Length: 315
Length: 296
Image 1 (cartoon, one colour):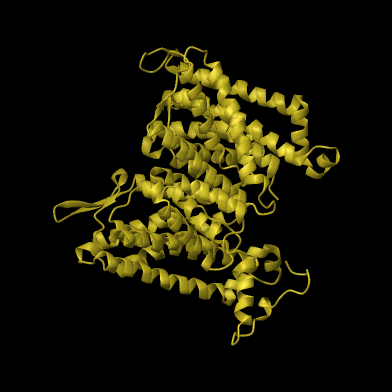
Image 2 (cartoon, rainbow over the protein chains, first blue to last red; image 1 turned 180 degrees about the vertical axis):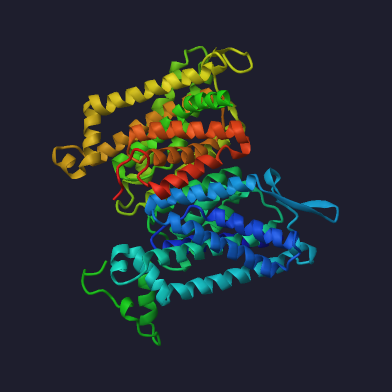
């Protein structure tokens, strides 16, 4: 039972990371540097509970806030480039953060133990949950509750006016600028929001595992985060969730294969891209589902943008 | 002080030559297809391990044999990457091949990890000199490691060979034509599918040579190098300017020098950070790179 709770808790944290990539992809960009924000969230929230003795809620909020502000500061210069160039720039950002962690020392002695950020040795003893007697189901509840909150929030944003603006930039930046959208500001906003969600995920992860170090935030983590979003699909908020569910189900299902299971990640990505290059929940599927929901008796009428295209005009 | 700077500069240039080899692979695929082949580091390391397997199967043969095996293995791996990650994916969606080649990167890394049981593997030394035996070349206060010099000379040779293929053969002419004007190239009878496959095999062979040189220069290799070569190759190609071979060479040397100066003056914890800061700065201030053309 505890084993499945652990799988689910980690999957929920991964889902937050996938969502953080999803928010950035709304504006047509992709970030392979979400592990940098994740690291910032983990360290800031960890320092707040362990060294300053904060309650975990404001600590997580602080980690989220610092990650978001970093998103603004990094986003303003970095969003001058786009596409694959941006992908490389975000990797550089995350690796800079990781190398800073390697040299970052900030600790104090609490109850006879030296706790805090210890450079290469990482950050031990982030035991807020367990020191207060929370059992695994309760910790999972905290993580799942946070995920549910973020999912609803991201879903609302995606379907709101701001969401339309984000997606307009993603479809065609020049056209979006022509109709008066401040493209740079909206892209930085999306980047910061993505950073915030990744920071929140990092804070939760640090408090879940009680230990993080620079190797937690490897390039591979950022790649998996993007894989959740791209393989799940970026057409709707269900996409990244589907991506995490897909990876978790298959890698857990392949457990009888033993160590060959590790081949699964790479092979899954390759096969998924060949079979569904635009993701499991791609735009076509989303449109068909919405149409089906409307045709049901009692279904609400579609909004203008959801009406069926006439002939071959729309793609 | 000045002596130290010059000494680390020498080391940086010699080691940077191998970074240049990795960077050239990225820059070529970018030039041909405007795409990243992130599996390139995996191709290099995978091919190097094939070369090592050949060496272990027949240790008495001269080292040129495993070297050629690595190049052939790299060409085959390169072709496989084209098949699974490029040919059948949508042409106008740049993220699909990026994601797919990342999958190949993980797959190859796991395959090597599985066969080597995660342990670093020793590669044959290029020549019998090392810091331990104290056989070093030197003038005045400076010295260079003999094996670094051999790696440097071989890297220059490999690049010269690449230039010969690209600018003196019909294959090179066809590849350059496709890179410049894909439609016009098709009109004069160059098959784009074949061109892509040839480009991947050519850069794959280059990856094999680079992987073998790097592994023999360092003396040992692990599966994790696949990712670190990929990140380093991308860094080199972007700093030099994507699509520019001289740019990748300059980028490789610059990164090599930055790493060794940081290593010498600040220590191992700071070796990588300045390379990434340089990458970040180049992307923000001059995204076309040091020698690249302006990006549209």
